[in-house]
Image (cartoon, rainbow, N blue to C red; front, side, top):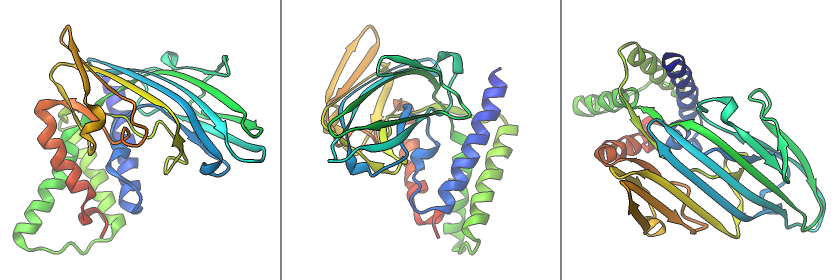
Length: 275
């Protein structure tokens, strides 16, 4: 079962890497395990506001047990018809996914994880989603790309390959490393939680995020002040934030992996993957 998951994980990563190589809007968070998301698919993002969002996760071994509750409102002056996609990367089991909309159970379908709705002005819709997701991340697959870049820079070699060719090379690297038994590290990013098409932000009026991790974990974020509420009890660290603007980029991981992950993030954001 674990091998089947690894195959699925690798294939998912390949698709994400190819997407990242072919669009300038893609970022490294596309390949990281992260919090399940609610993605609004229709109407304008400014028509909506998240009145309240309660997100909780507890990392236990290779799994993040997550819970997301959100109240979404139509803040425009007209009725809007839309739909949401429940985006859950690397679920441990479909049977562990439960969704409720306005208090009623909604059956999650991996082939069509969508819910259509319409809201009158000032009307609200309530979502509740619970899911267990894998948090293992292939460290070696990206290290190959990093090593290649360093070698080319030392040799003064200019990479003239097309973006598509570079993306394909990265995909092949994943497959080769899988055959060589990749090293895996635990990574868990918060992500957007609620967005339009996964790219455009939606305003949040209120948010509370609580993440429980083992005591040897830390956080990588561009806004450390957003995560200053940290408590330790029974070898568990609990991070909390109510910052509506600076929660999404936080990545939780073992402290021993922090420097390696920072280096990986810099490489993935560099022009090497865009030119």
